[in-house]
Image 1 (cartoon, rainbow, N blue to C red):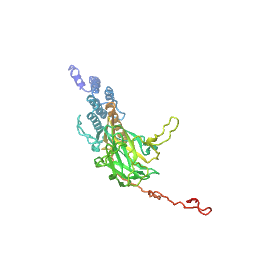
Image 2 (cartoon, rainbow, N blue to C red; image 1 turned 90 degrees about the horizontal axis):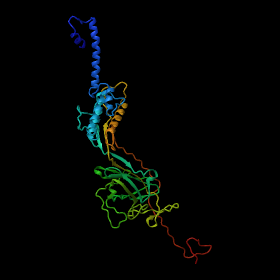
Image 3 (cartoon, rainbow, N blue to C red; image 1 turned 180 degrees about the horizontal axis):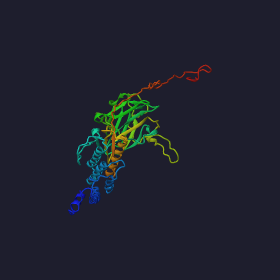
Image 4 (cartoon, rainbow, N blue to C red; image 1 turned 30 degrees about the horizontal axis):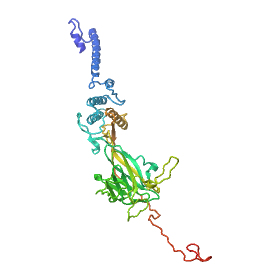
Length: 441
């Protein structure tokens, strides 16, 4: 086109027909002009995200916003990510809608470039469209946006030998969640003791929980949550939920302050912050298992008696101590606290649609690279001080199986009390009557 335009402007006497010297000269100049036009067009296109076709040009645009392409990203995927991140920043970036929009746009770019489909996405993703479910109850196949996720925590002090607790033992548990949490766990009987009616008290809230039974060595009392938030308790294969009692308003050492039991046993609730727990075994009249028990509501400052150790050591107070007892149980306590200032974006990654295998590409490596990229993008956009993460949900099918072995002890554990009595002799004769059981006349 350039050559024809230049030839049309020449005088009629100058012939620029194909094969002539003049036509060759015009073609040379026209080719240079065409190359220059292409370079200028490329310069114009390289200044716009939608029209730049070279990754280096897009990287220069991204450098203006502090966004660099990953080593494995192509042009279309980086363009989609660049536009999504910039748009999210203009809208504040820290809201759930903005973060979801960025993640979905990146997944859309993965579909077009890597030909990998992780979940069903609409053809046109607009800002504000809620594709991901909300909360852990949402189906995993469509992805989930979970705010204030649950995190299981255990009492740090109940580790190793710290799990062995004497009667009247107290421990502090710190619930750092945004709401009260149910305390669950396992109480295990230890060797050398039969714990009667184990009692747990939350001195911070005044709530009490007890089991009207006794634990032999090795037996485990396991607490779990049932439907509706009720408390389930098992000892081995035996359901003992009907023997669990709970109530509110417990006052240590108070007289004539009955605790009204709940119609259905409830777990101990941990208030926000530090909660002080108290364990002691309660002796029940007309019930077996008199060892390792107390028969009244003790005072909260009652402790195990001990001698002072060292010049600066402090022993137990005589009027606030019992004769020291061995460990009665082993405690393992946990709770699920709702994390403050945190969210999780959970995406299905167990089934990925790939129309055809790509030579030289590893599916597992590409998946790990993608979720690393998503995590970095969310970490960049989330608000300061907020724990935001992207996790891959595997394809899983769970089925609870329980297997227990019961070992029969050859030693009888029935509690008995030996009573010995004897009648003293009325008289004694030297060299005739035994000395034991006799007295001299």
